[in-house]
Amino acid sequence: MSEEEGKMNESPGSAVRPVFKRVLIKLSGEAFMDSSVGYGIDTDVVSSIAEQLSEVHGMGVQLSLVVGGGNIFRGDVASAKGMDRATADYMGMMATVMNALALQDALEKKGVYTRVQTAVTMREIAEPHIRRRALRHLEKGRVVVFAAGTGNPYFTTDTAAALRALEIGAEAILKATKVDGVYDRDPIKDPDATMFRKLSYLDVLNMELEVMDATAVSLCMDNGLPIFVFNIFEEGNFRRLCCGDEVGTVVKSDR
Image (cartoon, rainbow, N blue to C red; front, side):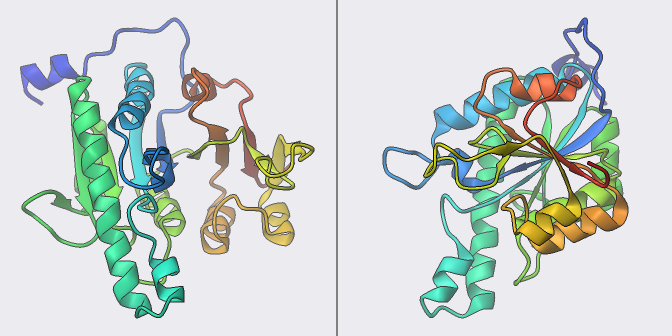
């Protein structure tokens, strides 16, 4: 790492030690959305998310991310309207790359060196996904954003998140959402919905809770990878979670 890059990634120091060394954050495309129009990328929102990531990165946590593309294009929706499913999914992968580049730009504006790796090769704008290269970036203090899902149609970015987290040896998946955790019902539609603090993988699968898709949850269950669901728009939540505070909902083997 160059001297300049070392300074760019220099930690400001923190009195609280994080409980994680390496994590993967799953961000939906909707998190980037311009709420005034219902689609697209709100650069102020992306900058706010980057600020939180920068703070935790400065504490020494190695950060990787998988981003969705639902704010730009949803393959499953287009497929339901008659588009060929594989074509629709590939278009959705391109949308995730746009979000990944926006996040990379926001992070680097805050002094955090970031690499985007794509599962679909597009060398002019991002690196191809190479596991060992991703690990090296993380070890050097760079943030890695994984885009284009798994590179295969019929697989969601949830599954991509579980797969990439396992590949890089992440200690947990942190699913960033707009709600405080996992509820028994949609809390936006039902104010009486109850939030769970702890769930098992089987609870999520049997109750069909909207944590991550069944393939992703099964991958995590088979490998003992915990999933933390939290509200990234609540100031300080990301830092508190990485410091071991009880934030949101945790999904793991034992309740």
